[in-house]
Length: 386
Image 1 (cartoon, rainbow, N blue to C red):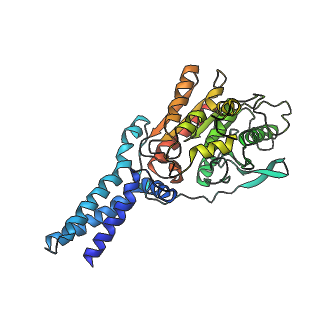
Image 2: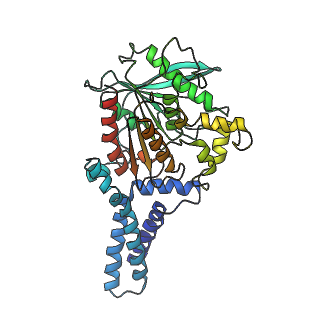
Image 3: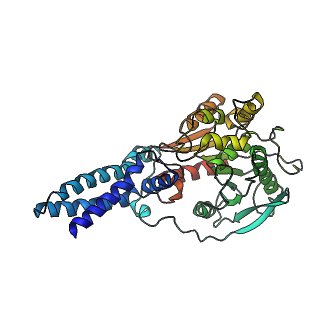
């Protein structure tokens, strides 16, 4: 029974840990890779238990199987420790103390914060809504707002998909609006961006009701939502990408934008997809923008227009860009392209590159990537929504 137990533990740890470093050959295994990366120390504990059992059996002189389980267990242990050791220098650079207590405290954190849901627009017969989280404390952040934009390849996903992050922002004094945007019919690059701008305008118009300042609004998006956050912020008041509602003479500009693992250079991304076993990147972009950019100049120009970097200017708001080194949906070069463009324009910005992190690393609210990102993000928002 000890042999069987050690074999089960070692194989389980190894078969989960291996996806931390190997690209997934299917969508399901990509989900495993996200979980394995973010909860890797649990795999390390399982591996260690398998090693202890294997050593005990080996010294008991009970066959050759313990040697195999010992090798597999050591391999799993080494791989599962990679996420932790890969971020030590980043944590030091950002002056963040990693907490094992928080890491092992739970899977996703407490999401029990109260919120209300309101309609901010009705477009083509569809109500667009936001979930409103009111600030839980009064501090220097009171009066500042964060508009949250969900991901989902521009054709899926729901608002309030990461409620623990909304609660955390509210606990730090920000008013949070987690918004809808139209996912269909595609191509929806103008509709989705226009819906984000409409939310900005609505919130500004009703700022007094929400006890916020219309001049202290930031955007925060993930994945496709991060792309929309960047595009809406960078193309403020650009008539080529209009809001889907009456502007009422209100400006669309925001004070800052936070992007988690955004696709940014869409033409480049079409020709240089990430892991196509996980997501068909070119098809996703073609659906979003209405065709193959190599089939006509008009479609090619859409890809350029919808790329946030095409709109960088001296009016671009301060930007925080976060990306993972093992992202299998959006390649890390997108971060580099944005960084270079913002540098050229002299725009205040900050980049956080998390070596081990997968797309969606922030699902683990207490993971190492989130532990590093949260204080950096909080300082960035405080500084840029004064």
